[in-house]
Length: 271
Image (cartoon, rainbow, N blue to C red; front, side, top):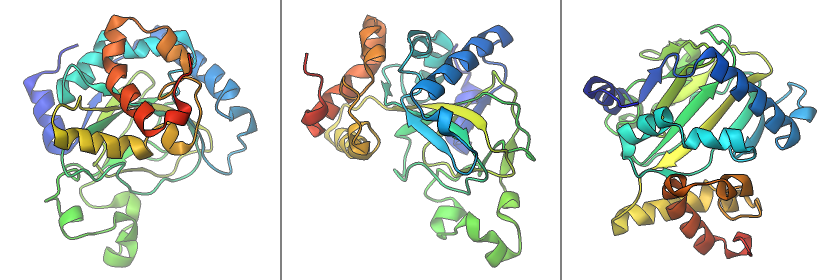
């Protein structure tokens, strides 16, 4: 998959890009099956009762077939098209969502540094918890950031429900659709049920300058297994992701793995 110039311009301007039907019905069936096994066995899914979100790290890293999503040419083309072909894979999260999330960004880097690729495994509409974004809100000059407006306070500020925050859009989806967005983009979900299935892949630019490397160290000090005091048994990633990796996949694992071992030597792989 190669992004068009229009798609790249759209992402850079609005902070997100939706790819409807990126995966076929047959493909999304096995992805859902593998995700369900993973969240049940590794992610606390058996205890989910709908009272709160169930989340776990590295959702594609526990089973060999899910690991191949990092090898998929469409996925690599999507990510590489916005942050470079030598991007760093930096983990992710798997979820049974419950209730609203409220408006939030996942980063405040002030530039395009890291992105999230989202896989929604249920059909979701604006009334049932689909992803909503505030286009352009990744930009430091956007009014939300420049005027330090909290979209969650829009009822108090403007008499408008947060779910209807002006300029926001709802990205309704069918399983097989994929959305990628800048970590700095404000996003939310409203009106959903108590078991909405979604998982993500987080990726950063491959860092070559001292300034970029400093940012990556800062990122991984928080957004990593070690940052959450989780011992994967293999450092930054869970063993299956590393043990099944070919040479091409290792390109996307290497930089974060090396920095993670520096930051958290107590969690580095021992053999």
